[in-house]
Length: 87
Image (tube, rainbow, N blue to C red; front, side, top):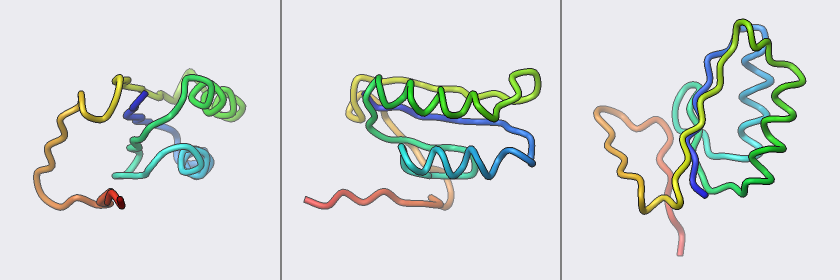
């Protein structure tokens, strides 16, 4: 599946979340990641995030799609981290 993951986390925990998400997904903008991931790997990511998240203050949003082709992305302005596809 293809996911967009967005988080809003207190500053003292944001570095941990950034580091964790980079292990599973592609960073595209501040607090925003995208990429192909299996359901098991997504559960693993979220389980690890729960170890340091404060659910009273922090939030993580995940948008799922069957694949990237079902998601139309439009960028206005500068794209911070272009994802190139190498064939």
